[in-house]
Picture (cartoon, rainbow, N blue to C red):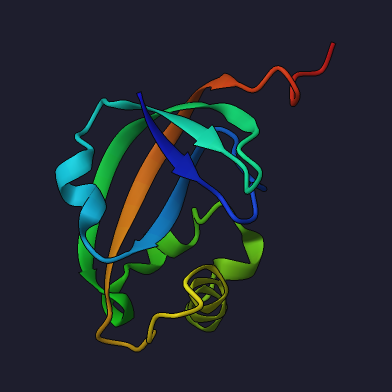
Amino acid sequence: MKHIEFVNPVGLVGRFVTVRLGDKWLSRLSQGDKVQLTGPSGESCGVAAAADIWNGDLALVPGSLLEMEHDPLCRTYSGLVMGLRCAYRDAVIEPGSNVTVIVLDLVAPSSILRVK
């Protein structure tokens, strides 16, 4: 199972999106594939299934996808740019930067996150 690491693993519930710089995930992930979600220290944050994948220029990310961004601070274009700059410190982030938006459905929350 592939792993997707989250710098800020908040909002990983229900259906949500994560935005990744570049097109690496286009060839690594297909609709229906399950992925292990991990935090910055490698801790498990659950398992999700890929529901959809969008790829294009950062400036063209549809607002409907931004609204589903897992990190509330990244649900606006300016917030997303700041979030990407934090996650990809050595990269140049500009409106024409290629990004991949992965729509995920949480199928198994982490036992750490479960309420008992």
